[in-house]
Amino acid sequence: MLIGIISCRSGHWSAPVGLMCLAVLLLSSVFWAQKPSPLASSSESECTLAYATYAGRLREQRSTLEYTGADQEGSADKVFGSIAPLKKSGASFGADLDVLTQETRRLWYHAQKVVAQWMGDTRVKRIGTYLITSEQQEQMDRSMLPGDIIIVRKNWYLSNVGLPGFWSHAALYLGEPDKFKAYFDAPEVRTYLSTITGKETTLDQYLLTRWPREWERYTRGESDDPYRVMEAISEGVVFNNLGHVAGDYAAALRPRLDKLAKAQAIIEAFHQLGKPYDFDFDFATEHALVCTELIWRSYRPALGKAGLDLPLVVIMGRKTLPANELVRFYAEKRKSPDAQLDFIFFIDAIEEQQIATMSTEEEFARTYLRTKWDIALP
Image 1: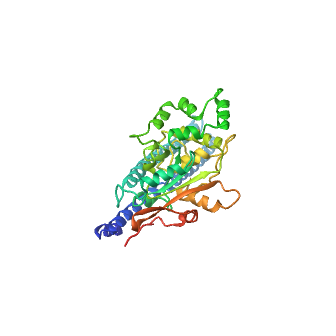
Image 2: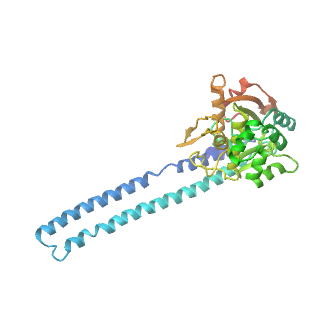
């Protein structure tokens, strides 16, 4: 905390560092709170042991009473019957402990959500401007096909502090509606859709029938700016335009799958629309999603569905897939026969010069090794 205060009171450049230090402290307290409490398990064990000990003693007393004939008036039954309330009390204690644990976790989840939202909305420098230009965004759009995976980073957000690695976000590219319709108007997609609907149809027609409001929202876009991506952000799983996604660094990867597999992935992605953001960052649950979980669930292989076998990593006791690990997976597999992703483009940023420029696949393959502090602090 002292480091954060000193940094914030120092010169122009150290103020962001101070805020980041404070953010680290906040995140650390939240993450530590996610660990199971040893107190809960030890209390339950102590209660169980006490019950077992007391029950054993009462059984000994009953045997003594019966042997001496003192049970003629039911004394032994009365004494031994006192075990039942104790057993019930132990069960009640366990239930109360479960309720307390759940309530504590709920409160910490809310705290984590508040902190994460604040950090995700707080930018400490170059506020309101990004290095990727509108011309570069158009170049990105022309290079991509529906089903591609976009990976991005925006400098100077406090949320970068709490995320593992250089890359911070991923999204699913759809393209504008006409491009989407034309790409998936393929015989194999039509054949598949006819088997699940019983009639000849196209992917756009199927999505319109299955999710009419969502499809209408996608085709309508926003302020004459077509929606081109689906992503999981703090507001939940939503459509967005390319300008919202592109920041200071951007790259695109293309799954080595046919159009049918990509169409199935898109259908799965539509199933996720409207779900809230998962501030617990836990891939074991599917009621809420993080950005890379949308990609992982959409492309996860299943019976009759080809997909991407993206390995999860364990962080803070949870299985997850940070965007940086997705890039690592690509980089380590790109030259092997079982590579699953192809490189499309990489826009690198030069913070000192305040520009973004097209870069190479070789450079992109090394980016997962970059520090999250990939900025110039004179």
